[in-house]
Length: 467
Ligand code: BGP
Image 1 (cartoon, rainbow, N blue to C red):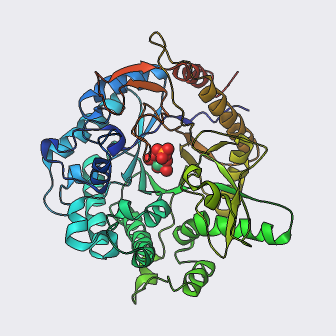
Image 2: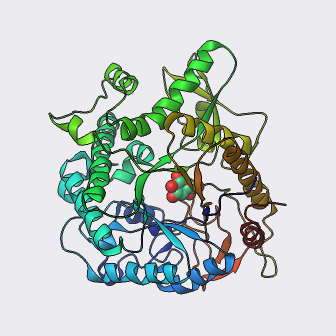
Image 3: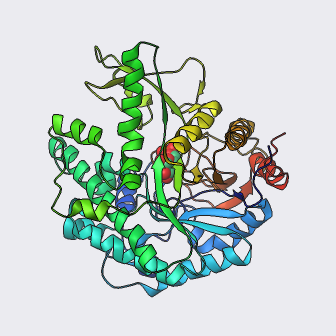
């Protein structure tokens, strides 16, 4: 299969994971800064990160050299609006202007997420974050500022990165100090408010007459049934609905699906909806869907609760959290797992793309997909053959999905350079480019292309040929 002519070959990052300069030039603090400072004696924090704020020209030069035609990144909300919704920080606008100019001058299409986990602390302090509807207004205002300043160069916008993950992780929302029972319900209220925020931003984009497209970023793991027992098959469907599709169903159909409302009502977790919310959610169908897809999971009907989360909870990826009364999770004997128990399942990607396409018939962009590993630098080189194998399997299966009729627009593996892992510091690396630093020692942050960089360069040059 030949990838379409306009196919965007890119790579991915996010602001808090690479920029550093966490309080420079007027930037405000975010939930991700605060969270990273907690273990900062052992795990690298956001203070310097990969120093992309100062080294962006060098990074864009490496993108160009790689042959990237797209770059998926995020804007730091608190760099643009230090308190989240107060005064604009002109120096923040200036930084992104310089970066977008540099990308466009090098023929690289920016694919830009507005909010990738890093909620300004000012919004948590003033309103309790997205638990409050005031945060919805703040997000729409921030989005409007970004569209106004950067919309001439940015034509691919992504609203909220992995809303479902944010809703499930209190520290991401800045509400970790609250009691567990309250936090869970608050998480679902946050979820509902973010659904409205997403819808209003999509509508704002259209009202402003912007030329380009806008959509969400879903955290998408595919779930297989643990057996052909109909109860397991149904459970796999329910888990995928509750973890992935409920959000996209809301974005697509403009209302929360009944299966989600039932699930939450039965558990006394249902969020409060105000009169008029249905109208706010309606008529905001996205132009495309951004997918963060890494792994597949295996689920069975919940019986005795002895799922692998109980037995090996420290090993399980956060997306495979136990769902008491609904599902228990299993390891898949047919695929390989890395040390953090994320598996490599390229056929799973083809299956996922087909499922997403069949359900919505919207163009898809893979904006994250990759393999975390403890890479080693040997005589100035990184021989990450395991990553090449991972990426190669994924690209082959993307091409088969395109053959099957899926409209896939872009591939942006995670990550372009090594980043701060959102849970494991720098030691768990995903990048095509090695950053020479450790958790405790930033060293000189030298950029060293890995073998996967040169392999991907060849792959892009040959329009997706992986051999
Ligand atoms: C996604 C996030 C990314 C990135 C990635 C890898 O969920 O959008 O920001 O962190 O996962 O996760 P981790 O760094 O925890 O391995």
